[in-house]
Amino acid sequence: MLTGRDLDVGSLRKSALLLADDVTPVHNVFRYLQDGAIADIRVEARGRSLAEALESKQAVASANMRGVKMFVPGPDLDLANVSGSGADLSWSSRM
Image 1: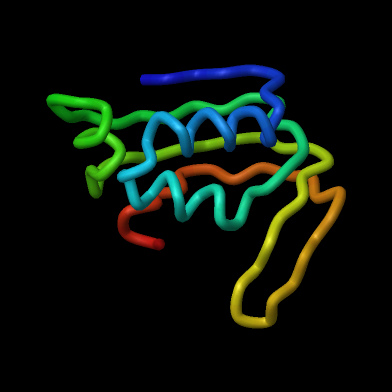
Image 2: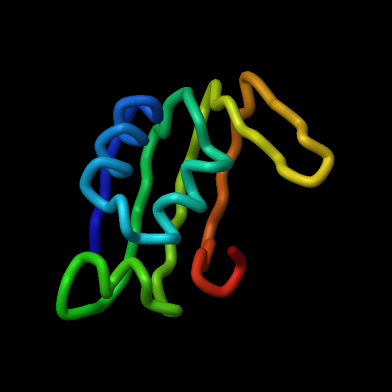
């Protein structure tokens, strides 16, 4: 399990993409989530490596966000100052 509090999305995005450049779910998450703050986040995954754990179909995340900039593909919407929570987000099965 990985947890975090008061994270800057821009800094987290930059670091995550640098460390996990070849992990598709990481790219998918930060395609939508672009800037703002994560008040708290919890990620649960299992694997023999970080990459395997993040690629797992059983990886689940929950987060509370505030002032987030998000992109919604399809209608190509850029949303600013979004706040709220997302729970039980399984990125492998939904992205």
